[in-house]
Image (cartoon, rainbow, N blue to C red; front, side, top):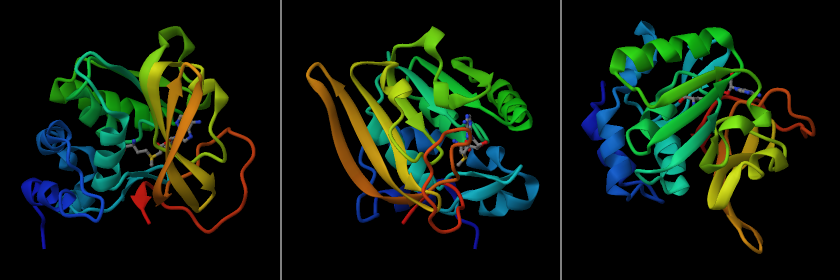
Length: 222
Ligand code: SAM
């Protein structure tokens, strides 16, 4: 059965840990997820599940996208960095809510497709870079928020260094095959770490320190 975008957004509000921020829900209602997947997956675009986008990568589960966005606490004047552009869906959701989005993707074909989608949908506040996101985007830092949409073995110091005071890093941390979603807030006196829930993301490539877990698919809550 095909699920509509409206139904998908209603379901996000009925989860055990529901998405509550009305602005995030509005953004999820505005962004056409079917536009970010290939023709074969369009009938399933509003299912609450990750879907393949080619190059062995995935568009994340809508609940994960909404929850990670909510945890970032985006404001209209925020400047945010996303690592792992993928299809561009998460960046588009953020672009509905903040002033500027910087997003980095290591696979050139995915980055180019995402750029094309942003142009066609009229998102003018998203900047895409092709490269290794594990080093962040120092020239554009500091950021109000950084969101990593691939799993990491540890919390990368480099990304923490690119946050403003009170800025947030939302990141899946753990082994290949299972991570925990973590929110780190940069405070004057140090970092405040808040562990949320288990999740499974494709691994961030190029970062050292991986412990082996199960198999990985991308961007879903566990
Ligand atoms: N945010 C995406 C979306 O909305 O479609 C989904 C991201 S997908 C789960 C993870 C993405 O991270 C993949 O496209 C992958 O190529 C990318 N990635 C992995 N390692 C990376 C790195 N070191 N730098 C930049 N992107 C990376």
